[in-house]
Length: 61
Ligand SMILES: [Zn+2]
Image 1 (cartoon, helix red, strand yellow):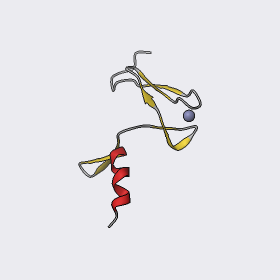
Image 2 (cartoon, rainbow, N blue to C red):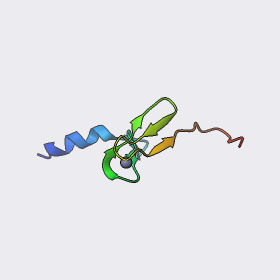
Image 3 (cartoon, protein in one colour):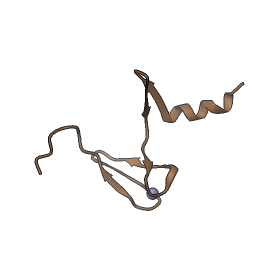
């Protein structure tokens, strides 16, 4: 019935009752615009927004 919702599921995953986003959205462009993943950062190809993905470890700086 709600087959149209299937496509959305690719972007989300439910783990332990938590909704996990598989892809990050651009905070500037808003929902629907996703950040491209690089090895140490994510970047928006639309507006140029870049966000460094720091592993969950102590920040020494
Ligand atoms: Zn953007």
